[in-house]
Image (cartoon, rainbow over all chains, first blue to last red; front, side):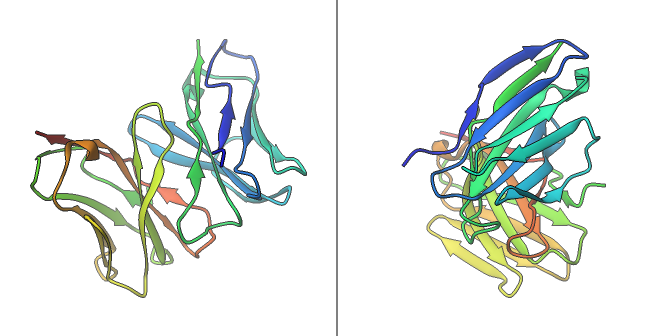
Length: 114
Length: 112
């Protein structure tokens, strides 16, 4: 079966712009989580959605937002981009939040802010 | 506030020997722990998990040990193989189904 699909794979944006990243979970999965990976910081939790509702939110400024659609696809948006937002953004899905075998991750979107 | 810490950013091991990756946590509410492996240009993949009611879980060459009193877990890989070379992340959640909190990762290099 198809895995978690994230688009685009790579993105270059200018400071002050906004960006939207997309995540299509595994078919049938209803839970989607987003993480930011930067060197030395590991994976920082952004937010988690289940059945179109945000269940959890990490400690990120309001410039970071997300949503989930009725088909479980999710988008995250970052407004007023800063250089420090350059990172690998990972999306993970599961049937329901926190299955025994954990989440399945996509390959990520590499965002570079210049 | 780093609730899950992997203090060794890198580890180098000879093929065939044991690899031991360590992870410490501070939140006593964590009761479910996982290890993920990540290759470059790919997302992390689930490796093995353990709940707080156990102190050991084994899956083939991979064993995870949990010491709740020390708030410490470790991943043992025996024997190590060159294909094991990757970044390993430990993660924890307060309840099974809660958000996962990840460590910073340890880059393992297994040399032939």
